[in-house]
Figure 1 (cartoon, rainbow, N blue to C red):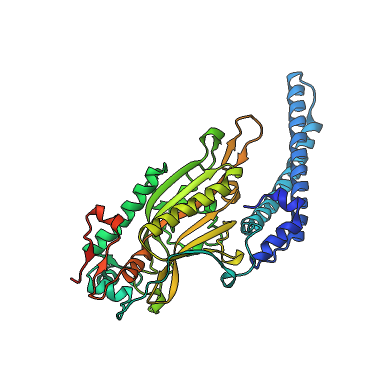
Figure 2 (cartoon, helix red, strand yellow):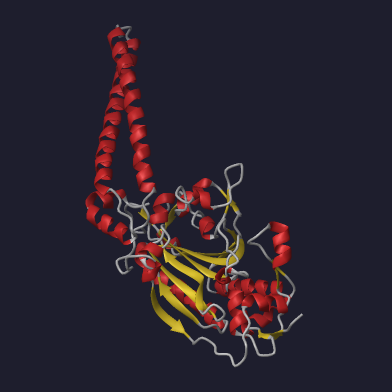
Length: 421
């Protein structure tokens, strides 16, 4: 949620930031509503104060048997006025909150305007592999090597699902173990959160109410998490931390559940896009002055993991319109898929600034005293596996149909080479 004080004091700054996302919010209308809301709140507080005064005077007269009929009449009239004023305030408060809830985060100053066409490549490591043979795509490789069973996955759950089998399951689990081991050694606390969350969790993450229809929901009001970020940001919801506790770093493994899945188009076949996939997620709670450094550190961690798998990749800074609504700035780490001649994102590394913390009431108390301050929240995929496996297979394939397994994964019981089944 945006700081309402920022909107009041710097409306043009807010309008300009939202326009970078392609959103032309009616800030003047909100400021008029905000004034009406504050005046209504003041009127209710005044009426409540008057009610307390009259109630106290009636009580005092009762103790001395003094007549109070006139005051009781005033109290009844005041009660009617207060009820009407509270109803007006409730209606204004709802409209006020709905407007704020609908606003995305303001992009950082160095985030360019526009949609994904304006995304900027800021770095690349390695070069696309060149093959002296007829290279296979990842779908053919998973079939030949017996790694993924799409037919039976569809039979079990429908389109957009698959089953890892044999060395495919072992490779998937090795990737997850490798990532978790690396992050735990770096000091991140390992968390296994629930997969079913409450509406409040989605609201704090910034996904609800706008994107409430894009998740799998249960009849009792819960939803399946689309990413572990949604759980991790809520670990300290409603809490005020001590400054010495920051930064707090967490790493979680979960499946991720998404309503949107791929199609039979080449760019979305295989495990590239589905209703369920595995991901290791990193999350940090920091002081505002530390969040830029934390953002760089999270990006470096994601890059280190991709580079350690021997993959060619690039880093892209997203334009404002392509950045998630809750985030102020995002870098994507993208691996090269030779069969597509394109890059696919395996990690989004984002800084939400105070947006999520304000929605979730997450603050810290400065050591020197003073008013509690909202923390900054950051997240990074560390990493998602469903696109890594295709990249590993395609970039490390050999002329004889085998695929070299990255050395860092062999400690988890994998062979040096994956061979056709």
